[in-house]
Length: 619
Image (cartoon, rainbow, N blue to C red; front, side, top):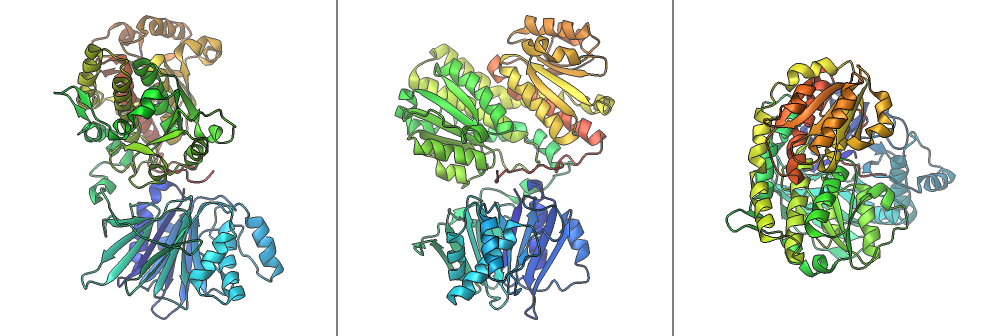
C-alpha cells in the first residue's frame, strides 16, 4: 500500500527520489523518508510525518547529496504514524538503511531473538526488525550484504518488497520481493553509463526509462555502477531477467489542466473504453475477440461454474459481470469478496473457472484467493489494468483493461473498464457455449460498440451537477437505490461518496427499502435512485412514490426523454437509452460526478482521501 523509490547512477539521487515519492502519493500514506549515501560517504536518513512536502521542508538545511538512494512513503501497519516509525530504518551500526513494503508476520519472534543478542530498537515497526536481522546475518556469517539478505529473508514469514543501502559499499543497490510488487527500471545516461531505478509500480520510473524488469516472488537483485544486474532466488539459483517495455506515458501521470486526477479520469472514460474495446470488438464482422478465452475455449465451454473474486469497486463490477454472464451464457456465477473467500474452506472443483478482478493486479486478498483456487485445480483468469502485475502473472490466462494509469484513489475509469471487459468476456463465452441467438448477439455487439459515445454524451449533458452538489454538503447520510443491473451501481455510487466526501452512504436493492432503510427517510435524507427506462421501471417508480410520501429528497438518474421520474425528482441526471445490461456504464458517470463535486465543495482531498490506499497490497 505504501511506495518505494530507488536510484543508482551518475545523477543526484534526491530530486529523482522526491519526484518519485510525489508520483506514488496516490497509493496512500502517512509519512515519508529518504536515505542517500552522500558525496562525503555518510549514510543519511531523513524522515517526516505527513506529506512529502513536509519531508522536503525538513531537509532544506541537510546534506542531500549523493548519486544512490532509496525513498519510501509509509502507510502505518506496525506502530503509529510518526517520524520514528517512518522508513527508511537504520541498522544498529547505521551501516545499513532499508525501506520495506508488506508485513513481516513473525517480527515479534525475530525481535525477541535479536534483543537477546544485544540489538536495540528505536521504532515499533517490523521493518526495523528486518534491517537489524540483515546486519545480524552479516555479523554472524561474516558475509557480504547480498548473502546476508538471502539468509535473512529465509527466516522471514510474510510479504515484503525491500531496498537496502550499505554505507561501506556506495556503488551497489540491493532489492528483493515476495508478495509485494517491485519493479526495476533499466536505463542509460547521456554518457552511456548504466542507471537503475526502483519503484513499487511504474509511475516513478516512466519519466526516465520504459525498460523494466518485474521481480518475481523470492527473487533478490543486485545492481552496481558498472552495469551489473544479477538476480537470484533464495536458493541462490541464478535467474534470467526479462526486459519489458512500459506502455505507460508521462502524460497519463499529469492532470492535463484538470484540478484533480479524479475529474480527469472521469472525463477520460469514453476514450479509455474505446481503447479497451479496440481490436477486440469488431462491429462490421459482429465479432468479439479475447484471445485469453479463445485459446482456452474448452475450459469455458465445459466449466461447471464461474467464481469471480474481487474487492471494493472491483467487487461491484464483478456483480454486474455476474448478471450479464448468467443471462448471456446460462452458467452459474458466484461473486466472492476475496478477503472472505481466502479464509473459508470453499468448495472448488477442477472444472471451475475462477476470475480475479483487480485494477492494480496486486490486491493481496485477491492474489491469495486465486492461489487458493489454484491449489484446488481450478482454471484461473485475471482481469487487471497493470501489465506485469502479480495477478497477471499468477493466472493461467486473462485480459488487460488498457484504460491507462488510474491515479485517483477512488476508482472511476477502471470500474467502467472492468464492466465493459466483463461484457466482452460474457459475449465470447456465450459464443463458445452457443447460448445467444445470432440476432441477440449482433444487437449486443452493436450496442456495446456505441457505449463510449453514449458516455461522452452523458458527460456533456450533465455539466450542471456542480451547481447543486453544494446543496448536499450538510448531509450526514445518503441512500442509493437500484434494481437488477443497477443495484451494483447503487453500491458503487454510495462507495464513491463515502470514499472522498466522508459522508455515510449505503446502497440497497430498491425493493429492500421497505425491509428497514425506509425508517431513515425524512426531509434531511437524500435518496439517489437509478431509474432508467430499461428494466423494472414501474416498480422503481413505486419505490420513489414511497420515498416522496415520507418527504425524502429524490436525486434520480433517468433515460433521456423521461418525464415521469424526472417530475417526481428534486434533481435528476439524464443518460441516453441503451440495453439494461449496459446501463451501469452510463448511470455510474453522474454518480461519480456527484461524489466528486460534493467532496470538493466540502474541501476534501479527492485524489488522496484519508486512510485510503490505491492498491491494498497488505491484509
